[in-house]
Image 1: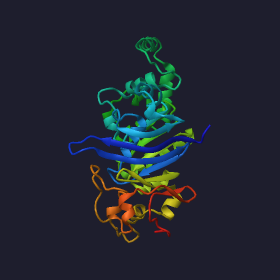
Image 2: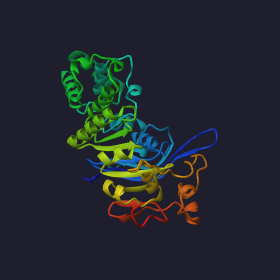
Image 3: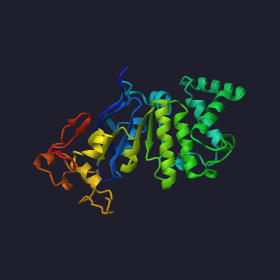
Image 4: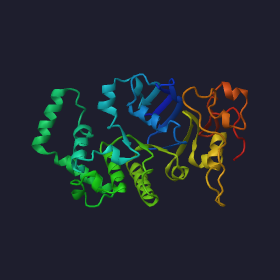
Length: 341
């Protein structure tokens, strides 16, 4: 069995707009190993969420080209119904940025978690025909799936939801923001997935609750051996929980590195500028000149070149190929930094 769980190769995503196609992803390539936590960092609009949606297979037909291999199968080449039945919500699950938007406000927590287990329980083969689904509902109506209920209660205990039996009777609006996010983590883990995509899952929480949820999420994926793609714009968070970090800029990945190497010796000019934009010990912040380019008719070559003080003519015309400058440290830059920034 290969150690690589997910392999994204030359992924391109285009969205139609009134001003022309927006090139949201431009030849993105990355991989995730089994049991690995990979951080996907970058400014808002860099393509982090689009990449997660492409992996989940929820983009429109023809929006994505390239390859997204999950355990050797190219998700983009599979029929949409097969992705829905066998991968999305089963082998690959999702933790949203705002749990309140992903939970139905009018259904009790227990009912929503039972519905999840009805369709995505790890011990139930995917139902592909209507007659199979109707038979399944009849069986569930007779036995009420005691085993599923116990799995749900166990999942709530694992994510430290107080009084799980009472929590099942609550509406999502009757729970705190931190409890709702713990709930979505429990729901992501219930199908026993191999990969979890977490899309900035602590953005809507206050700082103290963020730390608790991150610690919990990290402990859960380590304990269960699940791979995690963690998208964030917070480099401090990425440094705490990630094994490797992938930096994206305007739809392109520019640097991939082990976390220690990433912070100790960034090699792409954008990465160095990104780290320099964090407050130093004196509270000073160094911004990045210029602004993020539009994704409709974006700059050619390396999209960072209009803001880069190392750019040359080749940067404007040809996107740099990936080059491994140190073990596991890959950079797409014609003029990478040669000393730690």
